[in-house]
Length: 434
Ligand SMILES: Cc1ncc(COP(=O)(O)O)c(C=O)c1O
Image (cartoon, rainbow, N blue to C red; front, top):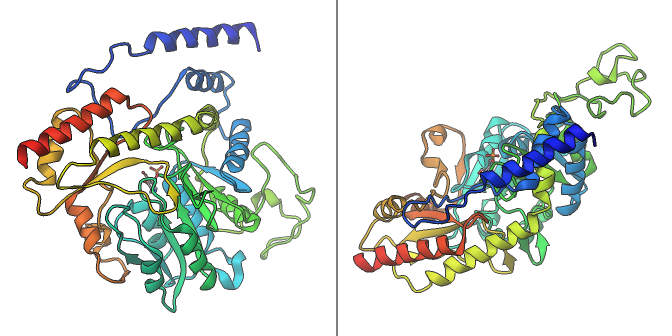
């Protein structure tokens, strides 16, 4: 490393110390965010170093991150994207690839999903001309069950795409088995659940494809970013092609002729020898990330285990502190799972002597941040009312989620003091009303 660079990075470390917020927690004044990035000195240095080296487009850090993250998540391949939503779009679109021949999904085919969740778990189904089939969730786990998914399988069903709700795994082993029995693809939206396990196995390793988000609210951050992972090398090639403009060539940026046949292909009706770098086998996108993002991802990844542990510890503290509070349904882990929690979900009993709006207003007034379980029942939103879809069974619980549910934070940036203040505030509100 050059002397100048070493000096600059040393100054960055000093600057980081200077920026450390030494003011401590002041109840009712300090903002308690429901989620957020936890960034340390190593993260700051990594970002500045990447900028100093002007590693801007995806390059060495991206490749290193993809390979380390794939290994950490137990998959053969990881492809970075510019968001978790893009990762979902790529995963779903990959299943429509002509390269899958008879197994490819075609317009009008059905994909089973969950009514209450984040919109971009569902949007790629519609964006590909496919039909979402909505099932309800259970209250407490906020996940669909294998029984509900089984009941939704019809003659045109070709895939299942479900998120592990706020870090809590769905019955993924059973649902993967259903997928196998009925020759369906399974996409696990693991955006909120990195590090969660089911039967001791990481979520994201049961399905054909899985997705992750690196937005600051998530377990690891790159500012913006996402990832598609798979153990299936054919699917990985399709994902990469769709991410990178739809091209057939798999050379990394800056590389040429890795296959040693760059000018030897004949595809479509192109002239023989047309440059493989510019042969397109998919109607693709450009959903790549930058190397600055990946540089941050690498230092974040080193902290994954401690982040997951902190999320679990924070969730347990809230769970124990609120265990005997009436009128609130506390979250519960899906049996046989060990969630890497995204948030702590509460549902206000419809018979409670207070409303969700009153409790949320009380907490927000104390600077305790709250969030909804994303969209709640998606079928009630203007965007989806006129979209083709099928609903199987009642969506009564999704409606309860829409009307009575919210969540508070468990992210690693929260301290015990903050968590205890959250617990005390909920208790004080409910005792005064109950
Ligand atoms: C379950 C789920 N899937 C997908 C996404 C989208 O991720 P991104 O914000 O990176 O696009 C989110 C975002 O919070 C999410 O919660």
